[in-house]
Length: 556
Image 1 (tube, one colour):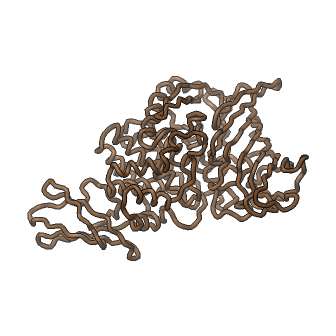
Image 2 (cartoon, one colour):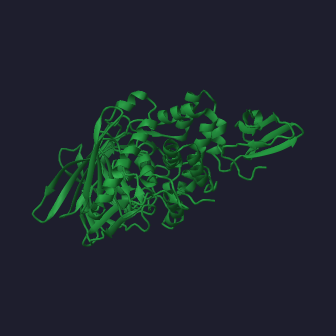
Image 3 (cartoon, helix red, strand yellow):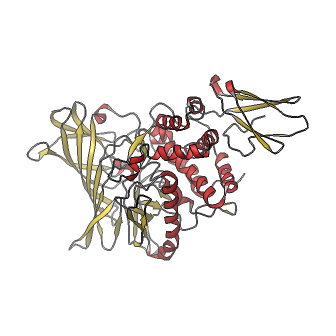
């Protein structure tokens, strides 16, 4: 068995380490069931002003949140790690003057008393001032927080990661994947000569007399709050532009340590090639209004919107057992999340496979495009051997990030898509992928934020059924909603080959099976989970000859 590519294997190995953290919602665990007080408001805008002090590993900031009230509300509840002290909370609107608000801290949440009950249609603007030493990431990016590192020359090298823990480990926020602000402003002050690379577009840099500088970033589209990221170092940039299939031209910027400048210049053409591949397969780059950015980080990687974290050390990122797959798998995987995760976001972490499984399947698709079907199949086999089937890929119950995270959302998720492709055919499958990214083709030409949306597994099921014209409930029930894989039983009786699917709990499963006999492929229909094929006794019958079906490998 070949080992998985270095990128995905690192993700799998780190699952255990990440679970060593406290795993209660509100204490380093994002999402889960949304409490009524937080369901009662919808965030429209965040403005974060932050001073970062490398000398003592502290931060001090002011977060302004603008939110619409969508249900009766007496208290505004924001998440914030209790390592960070809240110094003041004020109401800026709808009152005519600034009003100080009382608040309480309980288990990672800040309960802010509002002046009177707010009702549907009210808009609130609340400002929280806070400071302290943020959590140091134990094992970034899987167990996140702040990373206070040093460049080879000894300069500060700082990064944030918080996908599983949530943004509240370093700034006050509503820590749930179902609520994205429509836009976000980030103003970060650091000592000279450090550079801040972050999300969105750079609106300007202010230089101060105390030998600090403030970087002003603005995100013009909705953004997952865990995607907001700081990257601080004495960066240099390698820059180019990209012409989208829409005709839009947007900047591509690679922030790198000075020591990596020449390596980054060599990698940039491949970055552009990856962008072209994704645009051709799943539609235009979603965030053309801002930029596509890549930043060298002291941790492996993360899909921070418009500022992909890259810690692959320019080592190709796809070398296993002496096999060079011929592309930088780390960059390719993180770029995939601009579509699968940032354009299309799970509304609950129980559907996280829509991020990771879809992102992982883009790699064999790319290998098929660049090196052919056989290489893509070989790569897929490295994924198959790492499937655990410990739990349902997409349980119907709400889950937190740490509860759902594991190797199967990558490996099994990719194989479910591969098997669906086998079932519906390549052309239809690619159409399904495109419409999952952009259900309305008109949205492919939009870059003002309307293209961004939430999605569930059931949304994907509905799109797949509509485009394929095939009822697929049975497929999703077996592969996605429960953990066990189907097992195929085969028996030869004279000139007849009998095929029988065994599935857990008597679930319906009618996946047809390809059988190779005498150089010819026969697709055996399996109504009721059973099928027959006439095969002369002297001929061999190869079941699923091209390994396209995800099944229990103990079949017999």
